[in-house]
Amino acid sequence: MSNIQILVGSTLGGTEYVAEAIQPLIEEAGFDSEIQFEPDLNSLSLQSEQVWLICLSTHGAGDYPDNFKPFVEQLQQVNAAISDVKYGIIGIGDSSYDTFCEAAKNIDYLLEEMAAVRVGDRLEVDVMDYPTPEDRVLDWIPSWIEDLTQIVEN
Image (cartoon, rainbow, N blue to C red; front, top):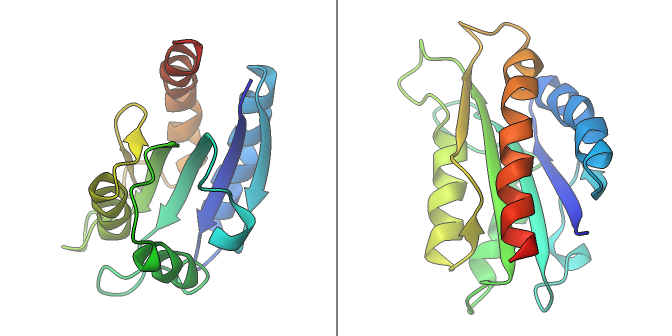
């Protein structure tokens, strides 16, 4: 089965907890996984099948967290389609801000423009409804894994 790279963009650390909570479920489903708290495109091959699960909070006025900005800048330098990349997105945000999950939406649009293939729907977790975001994510991840499994097997 595929190796899933869990790419984390976090300002205060809550998104890191989400990544750590979902990793055991991913591995129970038969996938290998690696959490990258400082994502670096240089450590990921764009020449072969890739699966990225992006766990991303929004910082400030809809910005990427500082640890994720270099990764986005690297992606923006790629002048080719990355159609071998399959990805999922978990956005963590606060709906009391008008930039709710803006970073997750922006990376989704960027990857779509680059011809990457999104698996399932983008999950947007509102910390107003889920003060412990991993609770919502743990409900969602089985369906994402099922969607991924169907794509990988075809």
